[in-house]
Amino acid sequence: MDNPARAAILRLMEHDLIIVGGGLNGPALALAAAQAGLTSCVVDALPLATRQDAEFDGRSYALARSSQRMLDRLDLWEALRDHAQPMAQIKVSDGRVGDAGVFLGLHFDSAEIEDGPMGFMVEDRYLRRVLLAALDGSDLITQRAEAMVVAQETRPEGASVTLADGERLTGRLLVGADGQKSGVATRAGIRRMGWGYGQVALVCAIAHEQPHGGVAHQLFLPAGPLAILPLTGNRSSIVWSERDGRAQAINALPDAEYLQVLRPRFGDFLGEISLAGARYTYPLSLSLARAFTAERVALVGDAAHRMHPIAGQGLNAGLRDVAALAHVITHAARRGEDFASPGVLSRYAQWRRFDTASLATSTDLFNRLFSNDNPLLRLGRDLGMAAINAAPGLRRSFIREAAGLTGDLPDLMRA
Image (cartoon, rainbow, N blue to C red; front, side, top):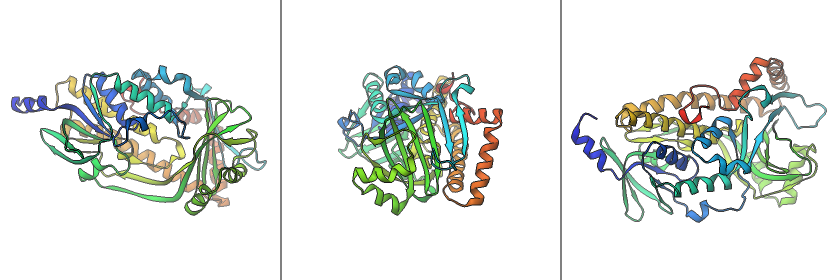
């Protein structure tokens, strides 16, 4: 920043950040940047009314304790509190809950740590609306809804994007928060690596007779894992993995027959069940960007990585990207650095690359280990879970890991 001409160019940029993608991670980053006095423009292809829809479509998220802290620091949690279901316990079973032959492999209890619940379940409709309301309330954030980016350009002095209607936006940093098929990443020449699992996630919400007690269940079945995650009231979110062909056949069934297929896998420990929202599917894959940054470009969320939902860390990993990027650029700005320079962005890339690769490797390994019915593998994994369950110190470490409280935390995720 000791070059006066370059400093003048940077001041002429329309925005500090251009954020492409207005789902969850993009708005969260704009709000985090605004706390440091940085301006953002959030560009999204969907109409604003669609993003603000109050109807429940079945989508929910397991927010780790660290993610909840971040939302609190962004002044969002108070509006979400009444819609959030604390997860007091997590129970992991190698098979269906209630079967006499099922070994309850792991039992994680929030009471074993001092930080409160391991996490919270929050429905997409509430989280999305709270984020959008906060964007509307900030003088440092502008939005372009129903806007498609058709071109981008980055140079040492800044970045620009061109929208389908011809409008051109300029900024110091271009952020791709636009999903696994990120146009920002593609146009920046960032390639991806990964593979499909031959599995599809069937996602829905159910109502049930018995209260869930704030307990989340992860069931490992031969075709893939089944997560039963507590929502407010007598409802739970279901993330159910099946092989490709079987999943498509199940999803094509009418609601009543769909439930008939789910019931034997689910068991009867919560009584009778019924659908409480829409059903949808998405193919499961591992996908990692080969680089998280390029000249004047940074990627967050699914644009940088997508992994198996077996650990429920998809949104949490994206929010940690956001918190880490906000940490790096705001600290750089306070020191008078050009926060979008290669040296600054490399700090973000180094920070998140290792954590993301570790998480992707562990979820990939767990899925391969548990998505089968090999008796030798089953014995080995059950003995392994029993060993963890019997060691309080090790179990506590896993609880803190599930809560997102380990490792080098960004400012927004610290207590």
